[in-house]
Amino acid sequence: MKPCTSLSFLLALVSTTRAHIAITWPLPFRAAYNPNSVPAQIDYSITSPLNADGSNFPCKGYQVDMGTPAGASVATWDAGSQYNYSTGSGALHGGGSCQIALSYDKGTSFTVIHSYIGSCPIAFGQQFNFNVPSDAPAGNAMFAWVWYNVIGNREIYMDCASVTINAGSKRDAPSTAFKDRPSLFVANLNNGCTTVEGKEVVYPNPGPDVTKNQTVADDSGSFTGTCQPVKGIGAGADTAGSSSGSGSSAAASSPAAASVTSASSPATPASATTPLESATTPVASPVVAGSATTLATVYTTTAAASSSSAEATPTASAGAGSTGTSSGSGNSTSGGLTVNEDGECGGTFTCEGSIHGPCCSQWGWCGSTADYCATGCQAGFGQCGSSLNTTTPASSGSAPAPISASASVPVLVSATTPAGSSVTPVPDTVAASEPSDGVFTTALV
Image 1 (tube, one colour):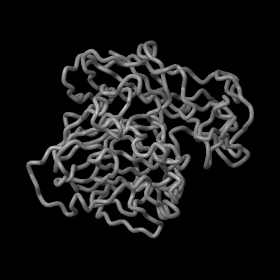
Image 2 (cartoon, one colour):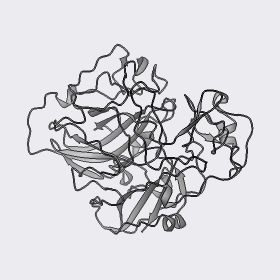
Image 3 (cartoon, one colour):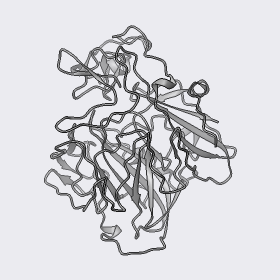
Image 4 (cartoon, one colour):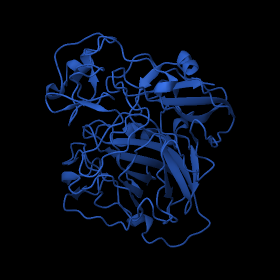
């Protein structure tokens, strides 16, 4: 495949939608870049967090696709071997902690196979290595990725994908049997516990395979309350829980340690089936029977239009003693809060003076329409009750700077589309929960 490097060409072909972070490999259910997705069911808000009431937990409800053409396997992994998953581009929220798990019962239960405490993710197009447990059952399985962010609203992000696990050639007895591995840690779903902003979640029971790459000096007390299972998922945990995983640091030589790599220095893929491509380092796309058309998805982070332009390259999360930094710089305000140029609000960020608009929505993003200024608007972090037009932000009097190649960090993800399938363009309308921090575009090339 020849990558399409003209951003303006892609933008001329497609519409856009706003982006937080989602996995780009393995291809998640109902993603626009998953060729198995049913066009009418594509989720153009794939990067959004789960509903706070847990109504679409797990997997945004898309686990129902397992066993259907839309839930066809996108990767085949051998038990006992090493692979990786990738995250895309968007609002990094200062990084955080992630867990990955396998489910063999269509999302009724999940078994954690690796926990990443800190620095997950802190760069665009980041890859994370993991080992499929040597005693993982063979068969159809569902891969799950769960992320708790450091900065911003107390949320939980989750994507799931269909995979196939083959019996491995080496069956060395693992230190912890697959059946004895923990269930997912579940918080922020109105289930009795909440993660603490400015801290990377330290899982009370991360399992035997752990990567620690913490950037916050003190992550103690990373969640409060007692976590109750949600829909039977999650073993339950409280602030007194202790970690049982032996773990490893990011610099350790343990084969279970993840490789944390910035977008400018992509890690060497652990498998030829990993489809992540940087703008300069292509790797193989997944093979799909009968493929004929190629789908390209370009994630782009847009610099804000202000006297102090946003950083094009993401900034790593918090240093010692701080609560973290965002990829966009902030300007101090009289109220002691700062304006985040990515458009985030809540915590230490306000929309007063933001080029994105003066209102802080219930989703923690600045804007100027009724979606941001009316129902759910957070008065403590900006104005509420008024609605400006969609092209004139309150503070600057002009629209944000147009997207340009010089103000973006593109990460290309490719996948092959079965012959005869079609891709529905991204709609022009933008969901209120997806703010102006970045865009992803989809096109046939």
